[in-house]
Length: 578
Image: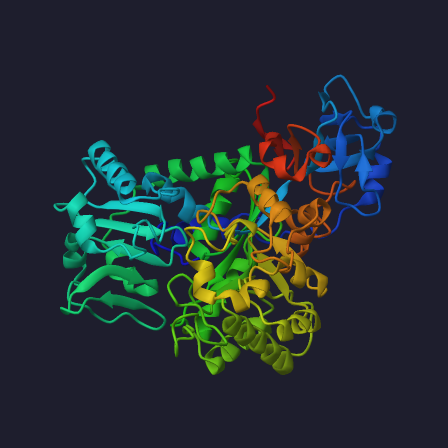
């Protein structure tokens, strides 16, 4: 997803200097191993928290099932039967009777936008609307409830809400609100619909420069329609006033609270810079960070190689903490819905249109090689099969230039992938990071995605089964705020996926496969498989207890399951046991 605002948090040199002087941030060795001898020596020390009588799914193939888990401090100290763990109960131990409910590793969301999603909680929420009347009602309601707002911003906007299948335009928005600028961002963050007032203020009413892979959709009369694709919306975004610091902090806490209630204990944030990482580290220092966050450095087409030193500094900052860096994030292309994803062949019904890329092959190869040489992990948004292939070419070029290493570079989304490229994932050790709720449930619904690619590409669209069966390591996430944060919703989508045509490829997943993609494999995707993603003695105490036994629930009903208790770093961060 495209990072919507660039100047959310401006922490500067004073904070950085304080953190550099703090030995907690610098000089500490990364927590890549745990002293198991220490556990054995102190095994008689009592647990702080003990789960018993549970259907404990450990995600550990060596010991997949248990009944009890004991936690002391920030670590798991025992996993086994009730009798085996009972010795760790003491007078100060909190004992939780799971009553046969699932206790499992906390969910790791491998594609998330924490700041972006949190700040957008202050905007009009438009997800789920299906008609122009619903849009008009919600916009007018939001305007009346927020009379002080100069701009009216909305999030989660569907692409199609008009009965004739036409795109929303400024005239229809003007009919709802004329006197205040309106800017509505689609659910995927790649397109904006603006009214006339917003276009005037941004200087876009009569067009302008849109940049690579972007477009200001124009009308025959030479004026803008109001649809702004990709970076074309930046002049509008730059005019929308930002929340003040107090509101930013409050909104971030709302986002964190929602994640905790959904059982999320770690996220891989898909946008970032040193300022953003510093903010998270500061929250951690204050005891206010309730999940672990892996923050990459956002590389843009205009980024030059010398600026990658910021990513290196991020990797050095707080390496053993809950907030850490060590990666770089690229955007290779846009999205299918707006024809901005790069395809190998023409879009259906659009001869000559294969979309576009933000990077030429030479440009991406050079930047990927530079990142790889610095030891950075690379995440690349690549939705079209042409973008996926160009990304793999770049990773191959980096390996050829720098030599093979355990890089664990990733392709994010790969909504369409050519079968010829799947063996290359395995050969290069590249991880596929996908999002179950992105796949349309059916090809003939309101979602325009299937029509854009055409039936001939449906079997290799959101191809989870094909990807996994090819031996590619597959991890799952949400891409919040594009869809809900809820891992349970993502799991439901993965288990209940149906082919789009009779006899088509069945890309549905088993529960064991899906949970691995949200736990141990997700930990592997951030080089933390020795620390989290399983319930195993010595591992970090990040876990969730669910409302019932996951494995006893029919697949079509798993959406009813909810987290009732979430533990991060040994602390209960959410509890609703009733």
